[in-house]
Image (cartoon, rainbow, N blue to C red):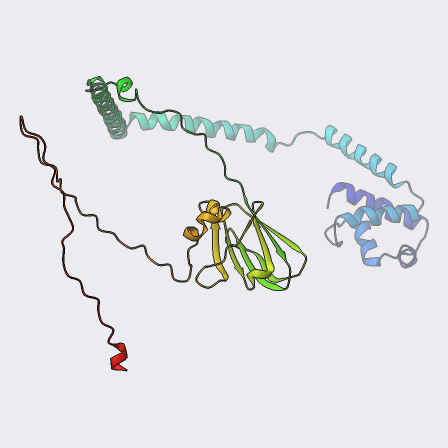
Length: 337
């Protein structure tokens, strides 16, 4: 509790007793318990549910007694401030600064006493010398490292200069004098655009760049457009009822072995062979078998031209086929049957 709350509670109690109002009646009128009203009159904030309730309950209490609560609080605050200004200083306040001054004087005297002690001074000298030695060691080691790094860099630069200064047997201008610099400019390939037009029902599965683009039964009369940047994989159940256009050109990617379109790959590399029918048979690769190309052994051809001797004409030896009697192999299958 504070002096302000005590004075406000005492003032409310005096006014209630002057008006001869019973505390029970006032409690029923304000709907505040008698215990809380007694705590307000005593100025005991700690006994209330919260400190905020003191202001609320005291204001309701004052309004019931027809007292201006705000003006009363301001007047009590002014009275308390005026009393604090008039009150003389306590005797203990004069003694406290002296104690603080005594402590500071004692603390200032301690270092001087320690410095006078010879053992303490020796310890200080040893510690300072050790710190200086350690710091000097680190500084010198860092300087040595910097010097080593500078020498290594200078050696590398000298080696590079020697390499660059070595004369080459052939100058760069003469070396690339006959080089053809007309390199064709890179041209980004067009996307693979596939159009499927079904004349009758047929199942189709199309993968574009590894993703499933079409997986369904084609509706007759409807055109399906699939676009890919790198590769297409085609599988069509009934190829004869589906028209296939690749980049605006009608193609027939039917496998010659099976007469079907099963996992036929069209990429940016072999797209021209699909568009050009003449090269189609050599371009289609059977994905099921994947036959390996035959290995052809290349034997060196002996020179049949003899060296030309002086004052003689060159002699050329012509190799003729060896004659022999060749008989056809008789068919023994009929006899065996």
